Each structure stands twice: as structure tokens, then as C-alpha cells.
Length: 560
Image 1 (cartoon, one colour):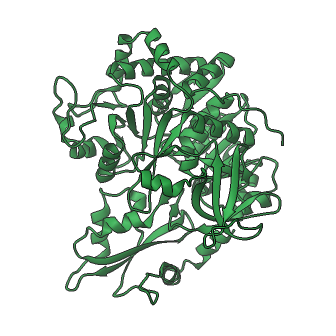
Image 2: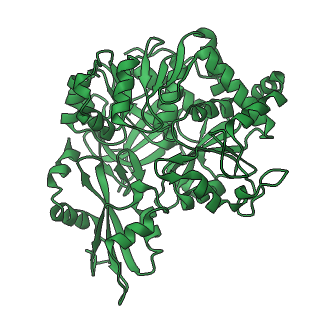
Image 3: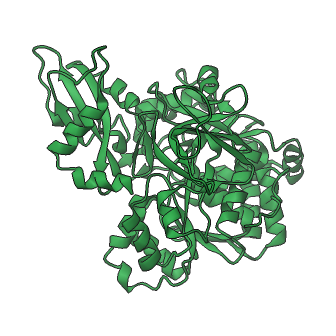
């Protein structure tokens, strides 16, 4: 397939949006079904200008960090473009994070302003914020001053009437845009370059602490351009994006990809709901849809799906975890997304490295993760010898190209471990290369578990569970699951004389860990399977859990 030149190379994100608005001013840019927010590209560009000027009115300077903690609201999208336009760095926070995770990210990222929703499902964001930053309950006349978070100066709600004294409402925030002239914004924007850091996305780490992958305008725009090119997106396309914005799937492959290609983005709901997604697909005549396999399974099994006219669907992206062949066949036949693509990547790669193409066979889309996007070099390295692996031989997938992050924010040692001296990003994933240049992911060097598209490192969960006084030792593994592809299982050894129940463990986790990090299976043991050197054999633990809970059929899904 011939690849056109990336017109976005050399632009900032704000510059890209302005160029798209000039080229396609009346084309529909975004549709938020739940919020009745519908804008053309010209209208969206104007809204972004207003938010950018309001950010400057708050006193935010170029390079300062602005965190957003919320679900798929229009305000989230506006903040992504507006921070990029006025030069602040957007810090994306997982909506499922709880108090202790929020505290870590706010401090580690040096956040100066936080924007948030009031609640998410059963999560009270204002309540958690009040626990984490008590000063928001008693704001002074000169802004927020927190002893625990000395850099945090401003907190703004997506809603107009926040219940905390120290939190400003969205409308009051927007009104401050009048304090900044358009010429001031243009002058600020003119100082920005494509190489500037513009986004910090947190990804879990083997140390147990999330790491902030720092990405540039160019990282994100080049990836968005080529990912959309692989789907053959044009101004005629309408892309349904039910995936979360906080994740690179949503904010890069969704928001930026659509803006780069002038396609309309349709957001069905603030978080994924199968029925609402199907309604949006039908009513908005979407031509593309995004999701992890779990989302596609839910849409296929939704009782309203058979009665819907989804004939407009053509393509999209499935990513996040392996796709069983039966699911891919149903996506093509029952949803009609005959040209749906498979993408593989890492947050640290902005994110996509390889992708299948719209005209690839179903076999390639199920058994491989495609071939490298233009501008990427990929090699496989034998994890033992460190030498290049031959075709058909397994090796660690390493990549070098336009998407490689600047590094992990304030973590030089971890950055050096991830990116070697020659600029190769080490994925930690094992793969083989087929003679046709396509890659197949065969395993993970790291212990990462992918539950419903969420990346979870067992070490983080283990370190948290170790804080329970009754626990002497703990090990966490991933086990197969028919719905989420993988689930967490925790093996726990108690201290002599201590007692603990499964409910005790889950209650301890609730409110402290994101719901998807709480182990589904809890197994109390007196000892762990170990090697002669004392290393815990997690593969044996996994085998026991599969046998004990009858997960063999689910395990077969992973081989597809």
C-alpha cells in the first residue's frame, strides 16, 4: 500500500487542529451523544481557543503540568487541545484510580492544576480529593496552598457547582478567558515546537509504581496520522470512540487521529456501555469503531444488537489484548466491520508500533499484530544472547522511530532501562517475525496482566497487599478469563497465628485500588511452589488456578 507524506510533521497539536479547521470548517468534528455536544471543526477550534485563554488566565505557564481526572466528557477533549495550544503538559489520570493512586500521580507529576469530574459510577471524586488534598475544603483568597502538594495551585470541576470550597466550577473557569487577549494566546503558541513535551501518560511499572511516559507533539501527531492512514480514514468517516480518553487508545487513536484526518468522532457515553455504543453506531452512521476484545464481545452479545442497522460500519481498531478468532469472525460478520484492523503498541511508543491493514486477510488479523507503521524500525532480540533473532525465532520486540517517548518523567534510571543507548525502545514483549514482515506476539518477558485492555503489573498489587499486617507473603498472577481475557489471582501466606478471609482482603483493597486491580481469585496457602534457589514459580501457581477453577476452556482463547 502506498503511504502519503504526513502533512502533520512539523506542526504542533494546536497548529494541526487549526489547519484542519481551515481545510474542513463545516465538517462535523465531534459528537458527544450523552452531553448533546456537537461541533464542526471551526466551532471546536473556537471552543479550544476559549479554554486555552482561560488556562492562561489561571496563570499557567508554558511547560507546567495540568492533570485531568475524569471520564469521556467534552471538557476532557477541550483540555487536551487547549493545553497543547497554550503549551501546558497534559497529565492523564485513570478515572478508576482511588485516593492513594491519585496522591502518587499528583505528587510525582508535579501537577499545578487539576481538572476533574464530580463522580464516576460509585466513585465520589470530590470525596477522594478532599481526603487526598484537605486544603480544597478551605481555599484561601489567593488560591490553593497544599502542604502535601506544594505545586498544586488550582482545582477545577467539569461541573458548574462543585461541592468543595476550593474547587472552581467549569463556567466560572471559562469566564476567565476574557482576561486574556487572543494576541497573547497567539504569541504563546508561536513559541511552541513539535519537539516540546505535551503529554504525560501513566503506565504501571514492575517496581509497583506507575511511570509517566512523556510524549511530544510530534510523537502523537505522527502516530495519529499513520494509524488513521492504515484504516484509510478520510473526511467522510465517522469514528465511534467508546474507549477511555485517559488511555492512549482514546486520546491519540481516537481524538487526535480523527482531527488529523478530518473525520468526525462519535463518543457514545462517558464510559463504555454496549447498548449506548450500538445506538451511537446506528444513529450516527459510524464507519469505524474502536475497542478492546472485551468491548467487542459485549457489543456482539448485547440483546439489542440483532435489530440494529450497522451497515455503515467498515473499519476500526481492536487492540489491548489478543483477539480470539471466533470473536474476529463475528465482528466481521455480525457487526459488519469487515476492514477492522489490529494494532499493537505501548504507551511509551505513542502508542502504535505495528498494525494490520484494511485489506489484510482475516487470518493475518487474528494470528498477527500486523507490520510496522512507516517511520518505525522493529527488531527482535534474543533475551539470553542479546543477538538479533532470526525469522521464526522468538525474541524481545524492540522498536525505534518517531513514536519513542522522551522518557519517564523524573525517572532517569527506568528510562535508561526502557530505551537503550542506540534509541531502541524495549517492549518486554516476546514476538516472532513471519517471512512477510508481520509480527506475532508470543508472550511477555514482564509479568504484566492485561485485563479487559487495562495493563496491570502484579508487583504493584503485591506491594499493596503486603501492607495488610496479617500477610507474610503474597504473589499475584494472571489467569485466563472468558470475558476480560485475563483476571488476577492472589496467593497469600499468612503470618503465624493470623487470620484473614477473602472478604477481608477485598474490603482492604476497595477504595484504595482501582476496581480492576482487585484480585478476583484469592488463594490462601502455607507455601509457594519454588525453584531450588527459592524463586516462586508463578507458572505453577497459574496452572493450579486454571485447574481449581475450571479455566481450561478460557485458557484456550489465548492461543488464538
